[in-house]
Length: 152
Image (cartoon, rainbow, N blue to C red):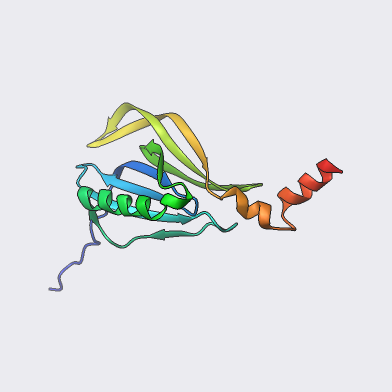
C-alpha cells in the first residue's frame, strides 16, 4: 500500500512585533513557545503592497541579532523603531493614501472549542504602511491634486 503524505505542519504564531525603518516594515511572527520566529518584510517606498516572507526560520536570538543589524544599518535615517505588539494580523487594506496594516492589539479569552481557544478582539490598531514621501514625490497623485486644489 502507498504511504499517505500529510501536509507539512503549519506553525502558528501567537504574537507579532512590528518594526519600522524609513524604507521598510518588519513583522516578526513568534510561535507559542517563544522560540521560533518568522519575518515578513513590507516595502514602504511604493504605492503598491509589496510583502516578502523571509524563508528562514529564526530562533529568538537570531531574530534579535537580525533586528540589531537592521537598526545599525539604518542609523543614519532614523534607525529601527518597534511600533506595535500584536496578537494577530487582521489584514491589509488600501485607503486613499496607501496601504494600512490592521492588527489585533488586545484580546480576551471567551471560551474553547475542543482544544482550541476562542478569543474576542478587545482592541485594534491601524498602521499606515506607505512612507508619506512616496505620495509627495508623485506629481499626479491624488494627495497632490487635493493639496493643489485646497491651496488654489
